[in-house]
Amino acid sequence: MSTQRTVAFHTLGCKLNFSETSTLSRHLEAEGFLKKEFEEAADVYVINTCSVTDNADKECRQLVRRIQRRAPESLVVITGCYAQLKPKEISEIPGVDLVLGAAEKFNLATHLRELTKGNSSKISSCDIDAVTGFHASWSVNDRTRTFLKVQDGCDYTCSFCTIPMARGKSRSDSIENVLGHARKLAEGGVKEIVLTGVNLGDFGKGPDGAKRHEESFYDLVQALDEVAGIERYRISSIEPNLLTEDIISFVAGSKKFMPHFHIPLQSGSNDILGRMRRRYRRELYTERVEAIKSRMPHCSIGVDVIVGFPTESDAHFRETFDFLHGLDVSYLHVFTYSERAGTGALELKPVVPVPVRNERNKTLRNLSYLKQQHFTQQHAGQVRPVLFEGHEKNGLMEGYTDNYIRISTPYRAEWANAIVDWTVQ
Image (cartoon, rainbow, N blue to C red):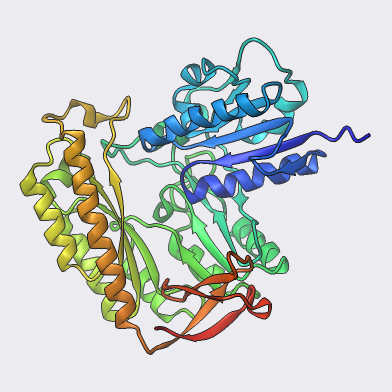
């Protein structure tokens, strides 16, 4: 009878978390663990948490309760941003055995060698200022697309954000290392790499947080463009103040970097941007969008926006709506503001009532739908390259055009992980 230990993972939050979970999974498989699906019985369950919103915290608790009902004798490990921010709170959740902060996340295998089911949770965490190392991570769920982490942490002080407290100072991998990872992924058949990080445009600060941009994100994209075997790159998200003319011009002339940017805005009101402590105003955002569209009219531009930030009046929200309505962008990721302990926004008054926040979210989600429909219609009849994914769902397969239009079509095995010329409908 096999005594091989089994492990199951669940990831909450961003693409960065998914890349790290995938790396943790590979670490444990190398230690002899057998990976299981999260809904299956396993000896160990690992939840990699986010703490951007209250929902992520609540979902973590719900997941632990589900594990307790299904497998009360299994070990439960919580890591990620929520684990770094509130380790004691998590350790008090019934059923949690181990809480790993940011410095210990990638030592998971070592901790599991010594961990047994007990009556109290073990916390292994430290002050975030002591977290200085960089751990390369990438996802390999299928060969089509992988999320490659090249940067971590953030030196910004946005008043709504807990990420600097959860992930520490801005630090990066070296270009040499990133190129090595990209070549390895290419050898494994990966066609598209999505570059991920907390503040990608700040790439170039060394793992100790002391090196000041001996390398830059512009240097990185230029170097990656020369890697043989990778056919597509995407930039997951980049701050508007760090999205330079050089980067825009380079993407416009590149055959590998896709015409697709995701640029956080957060508010279309300069008053609110100031209270958020963002490092730009709406005028600069407009300049960036116009610079992209002048060089790449077909480029997709995604926008992050937060509704219901403290002091956001009806007039402020109308400013945001009108600004986005008039902006040549393709889709919105809309977040409802939620109070986060330790952030400066907690001091701001008046607070926007939750029902008003939710209504504003719905309004902008409707606008996003219209933006997306309009962007797709603009390209109807055009032939664009689509990279199709390998998995089949209900007889269908999906893929994305170079400029991020989602395509769904009946499954054809020969199209899996292949780039196909497609007429947009």
